[in-house]
Image (cartoon, rainbow, N blue to C red; front, top):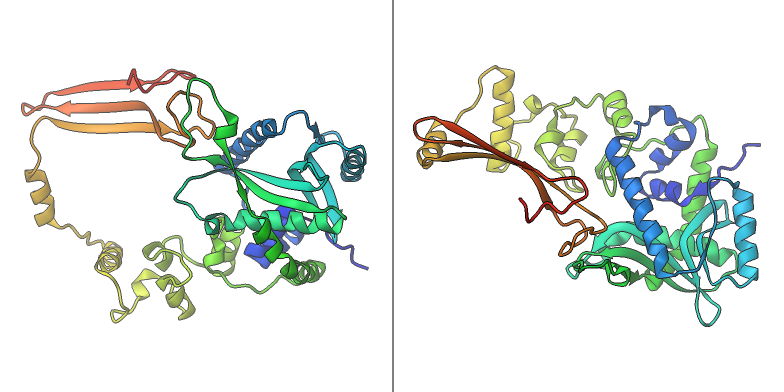
Length: 368
């Protein structure tokens, strides 16, 4: 008998994006790309934001991950609930083959429970719930598991950084974070979850049969899949520079239309294929480069150069972002310039160089 695979919420979300990706993660993970530095930094940012958000509900108890096993975490969560603990960080539950750890589980005044899923993304007044659709699905599987474990959930929320917040002299975490209540949205997804889980489990139990799922928009939406190299390069021999470099990969991408016609090389795009002026320029340039004939619009180049006047400035600069604002007047993820290098060319061709590099840990804006 094949042992049933236990799903975590991250695996569940992976499966929603692509069931083949889920299968590869469990049954053939060697083909997946290694986690890069950027992804590691995102996880580290999430850890810091999550830890800070716990201060919104102080005096709670934390389920330790590093020195406990799964069954111990589940048992301790149950015990603390029985003991009447008001807030539990990383509360751990298992139901229907799914394991979830709730960032913040809070007991309300009626004795019911609130789920808070903390994300290091920002929310501002221009955004809508559809912009956090993946986060809502994350909350929905937690709701499903906790409800299955017998807890009455009165509120489900995604806790985000408030993009409209501007730090004062001190950091105010009550203003820094904003709760988007998604209880109704999470409930509306509950009926779909059992069938989805059955599909996932059925696929995973077929350990020798890789799901036959073609490449498409789901390879990068909502996240770039770590099986892309395997699915695109190894299995389908998509060249490094292809029709997918000319057209953005969307649900109705022209690249996908060409791909389904058996066309992946830019040189094979028919002349009759409908293109915008910019796309036609890119296609023609690619074909020209293949024939070692670069395309140069000398007229526009000369027009641009003739519009310049001395002194000429050649400027390079760098900025950084802080999810949790460290300086007064900063919002989450606001661009903060901390370095520049500029070469100034005079008409007599003399060149002067100026530069600035902020000191680590200090606000560089005023000095810059």
